[in-house]
Image (cartoon, rainbow, N blue to C red; front, side, top):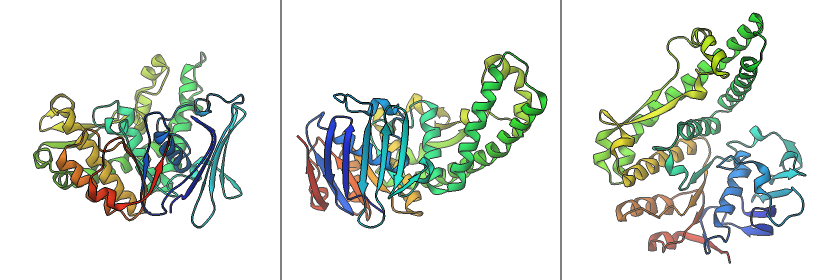
Amino acid sequence: MSFVRLSLENFRRFPKAQFSFAETGLTLILGPNGAGKSTILETIYLLCMGRTPRDVRFSSLVHRGSTTAYFRVEAERPSGPGRSVAYLNGSAVVYHEGDQTVRRSDLIGKPPVILFSADEMRIVAGEPALRRRMTDRILSQERPEYLARLKRYTRAVEERNALLRDDMPPDPGSWMALDETLAADGSEILSARRGFLRDVSADLPDTLKSLGSPHLAERIRIEPAETIRGEYLNALIDARPQDRGAGHTTVGPHRDDIRFWDQTLPAAETVSQGETRILSLALKLIESRRLAAVSQPILLCDDLFSELDGVRRDAVTAFLAAYPGQVLLTSCLALPDPLLAAVRLTLTLE
């Protein structure tokens, strides 16, 4: 599954524009800084996930020169219905698959999408929310049932937090029913995340070796950092006094993290900036293999080659040149000859 033509109206820097991409293989997007290269990738991500990778407000995506709070992005497929996302008059977001109005969740994983960007390369050393988001993004694209549970769980957390902030003491029956709902979906989410982490841990050493980093493969391990001790429902009940004082739910999947260890020390304290980037890149390659088992993902690569040395440039070049799906690549640097030879279409912005 791929998108071959993209139309933008009132989106970011584009009052109106249209772009074409190769159906499979590599489309190279060139242009000076500020020309909109990253915006094109952001738009494809939006069409695949229903929101931008930075999860900003839709109002901030409207073309700055526009007099109305409105934008529309639309993509055409080589076969099958097209897709569009519209932000209407500063109020509603409407998703369409062909002529049918759909929910945001109906877009996710159809097709899968993977973004390689500077922000995504902060997975290892960045805030915990980045790692939770990575895990949820991958599992949601792999398993519709995980996405459904995550949506129910998120709504239940919001309801529980509202109950905790209420001046009146919560009704015991309502509180218990809400905690039981949280525990049912939260336990399944935790189980799926643990399985995901076991799989990633098993794949990580060989992936790091393929990137020319056998020393990292021997040193790095990952494990979950959970806020729950014991059975989740009991943990929620035990945490009620603490949660009441804090005004929010303090235990559960929405608070979990992934820890990266360099042997016995936290990796964030010992690995170099270059090693952190390699480790983040390895996680992205694992993500691409996992999602390919479901459906070939679209790869969005934003200035991927900056800060990569020769060995890693060669490894990434080999991966992208042989990739059977659609790849959109922006670059401000001269690309390796083998990658240039694999380019099927070049898009130049001014």
